[in-house]
Length: 127
Image 1 (tube, one colour):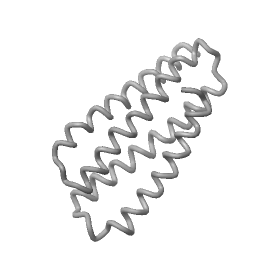
Image 2 (image 1 turned 45 degrees about the vertical axis):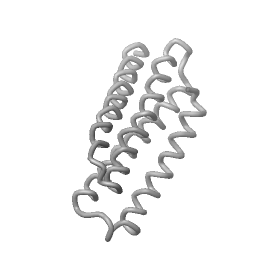
Image 3 (image 1 turned 135 degrees about the horizontal axis):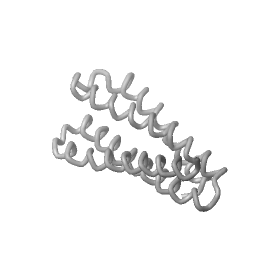
Image 4 (image 1 turned 180 degrees about the vertical axis):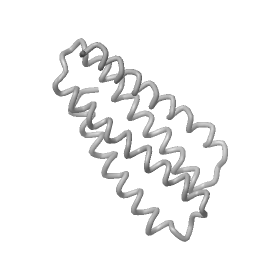
């Protein structure tokens, strides 16, 4: 992943985080029960946190030398995959109540962990 694409994906994810948060607050407030609202809020929170870190990784990628950029690329891809799988499965679970989606969510969490580990590796190598 290049710096440009990391920044594009971060921008799109940030945009959709706001849209999805507002959609739940206004369009879904009478459709979702408390449990589903909690799931939705968790999805929005994790999406925004990891959108922000994806933005930072994109900025770091734009300044990194090639040897350090490889771990940043892994980090960016992992955060993007985590956002899609973790938050995506929770959004779908909240809307559909399909319980087996809860088994998919940890795969997104694993992708987040890989992203954080790759960012740590970058920090160790860059320092």
